[in-house]
Image (cartoon, rainbow, N blue to C red):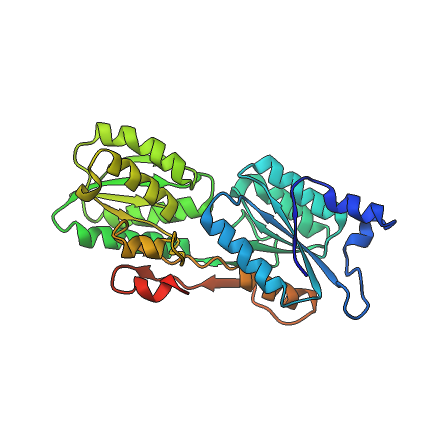
Length: 320
């Protein structure tokens, strides 16, 4: 069954009421007969502006089609904490059977995730952690490993020292913190490597493009740009290209998406020196949701593997 996108809050409730059903009838294993939907799964996605987020949605939707007993309802919070809180509360009101949430930021989303958990709704937290443990399963890569590997790569590339610009994701999100702190811990062991500037580009290429321009004006000597995702790395690259300085520095990203516009192709094209694979977990989220809903054993934490992608192995990932 194809998933439906919730563009406005309450649309699923309206559909249910138009069919003469109670709100409660939309969830809690509605449609028990053979061939009918048994479980309603609500997915609260923090945004779909990033290519990685779109790939995550696509992976989840594709896997959901292999599980006809699951009906997937997708809500896009558009990087708005308040909107995401309201969407999750709508799922709670509808009494869906399980909520998957990719939090926009940890602290603002923690209370409403706890509300769902306390209401007896199964909860999977996807990729970005919340504060506390009021969920049934967390799925995601280890961003601290990525941050440390990025720091080690920078240290290898600058054995005699150099200057680094860090392009950060959304400050309140755990991936932005975890991709930064371990990198900085590594570089503290190399005092001749300096982080001369940092800025937040909210995971978006356009923001990185706009904000990198003034940095290039202010800083004459930049050796490496480390961005928390590939679109921001590309934005920084395009800003440097505008002033003819793209070959003066190396660009490092995170995500490693396949396809013609993904980070792997950027590596092959020489735009990025390297990226780090960041599996999206969409497929795994649906598989574990089914296990939870049908009473099968499941792990409460699923750590997805990562790897550095450079010119030596990028071709292996482009078509994956």
